[in-house]
Image (tube, rainbow, N blue to C red; front, side, top):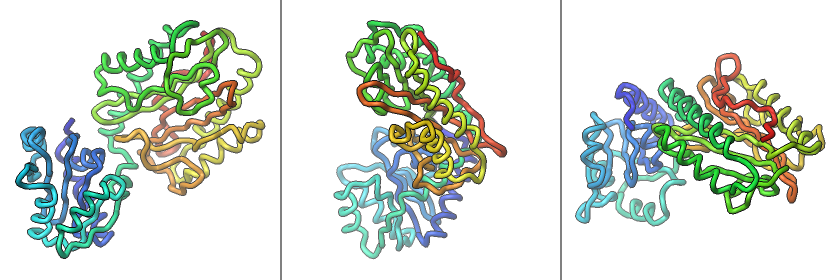
Length: 364
């Protein structure tokens, strides 16, 4: 996937501004999502090195030709048995007079760091793993269009599998069908392995679909997303096989009320921790506070979980163009659980909900 060249050039200049503010001469990117964000091309087993003197894509023979064609304005070099990553980084640091080099400490192995540090004479390597991640928080129009497209495909796939859910159907059968429907719709695939959790399994926020056969009276939680041109969507709905009982209706209403309050509160300037607290207070007031086990949500984009985190520990203020999830849940071990999740785009005066599946309790 290749973005518009002028968009990529603008991103490069934003990265350079951040480097100057951080007192860096250059940065070595190894996070594949960040590489795609900055260069416009998504690949594997590659690195990019950026400084005020230029930008170079360091890849291997599998990708060299296509990157050279798809990334105008970039120097492209190919690692080999004769010339390794450390050799190219050392060469360009010397040519471009890079004395202070940033690197992504969460995306590089200790072995590679040691190898680079030993090879880069006179270069001070500094961990700056969030520089590009912070730039990714506010999405560009192109990115928002990709995320909306992914969300539409996920909505369609969910409506399809809803028709297949009945007593006797296994969790993994629904998960496999979701994957097939998304590929059939032209998506890159799933933005993460779908969660299909039925019965008591629905009390596990990250349950893995297994051989359990759905039964009448089961809650079934489906957490799923599509990926389109590298960009993710995320949505969760909880339904009932058959008729819901009084407790299921109560717990579902607790979660739905909190979810709606949080969505309604989204606006520029609101801190993520305060948004999390709105949902937490709502659930706590109904007596289920200890059963809300995770943060309210997270940023969505090139990664399914990215900045900002919508949690009690994040004081980042929302801005127009940010894409976040709102996903409160209540989980009762041995009984089941409910999670309801939308992906929303922060707007100038609120938010746009891009996951369109209705949120009333569906009884199948």
